Length: 138
Image (tube, rainbow, N blue to C red; front, top):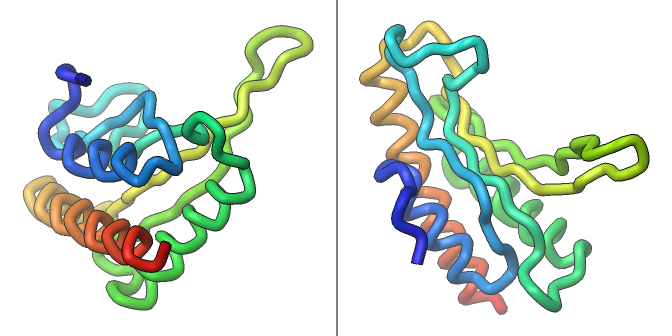
C-alpha cells in the first residue's frame, strides 16, 4: 500500500488505481501558498499514470477522454480546469518514456491560495464521482 501520498490527492490516486485501467506512480496535491513556490510550477494538482497490466493504450486514452468530457459537461472549466495529456520524457539518447497526466489547475491564477485549495479539493471529489460513472458504464 502506498503510504507517502499527500492527503489532498490521495483519494483521487486511490480511485484511479481502483478502476483497474491505470497504475499511478506520481502525484502532487498542488501547493498554492507563496511560501510553497519553487522554481517548478506547483500551482496545480496532478496524477501521473501508465496503463495497468494487460490494458491497451487505446483504453487508457478512452478513459482519459471520458473523464475530461464528462467533467467539463458537468462542472465546466471554472474554477478548476481539468486536462489530461500524454507526456513524453527522454530517458537517454534513444529511449522516450510515455506516461499519462491528469492535471487539475485553478482557472484563475490570481485567486487566493485558500480558494485554490478548496476549489482543487472539490474538483478532486468531482473527478472521483466521474470515475464512479466510468465504472458503472463498464
